[in-house]
Length: 128
Image 1 (tube, rainbow, N blue to C red):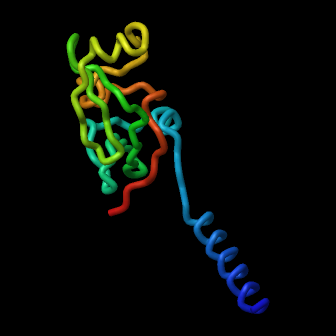
Image 2 (image 1 turned 60 degrees about the vertical axis):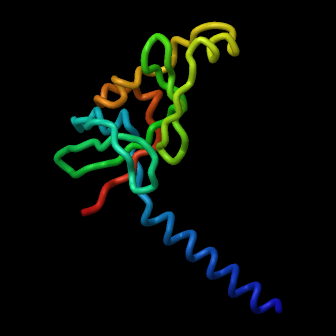
């Protein structure tokens, strides 16, 4: 029994080391500083919304880090982890939080790739 725990622990430790060695990430700000161009909003393989950044060294997918976006003066959309968007009545939402939230991004800007760093999460390289 003790021997099995030792082997399992050793196997788990080696897997963690291998996984840590192969992972790579870059920040959105860092990619912009390197001259990467931001594409239109798209869905990643997991279904999450984000943007493809293209540069001389390849392409990266940066996940979106927002849950609400402004459509127009009457409508917001709530963005689920699956990438699905659900319409929300803006007046009802603003009444529930005590007024307008100026930090919400505009959906048209997000779709066009005009995105602020605070609305972007982690970036991972695209292969192939």
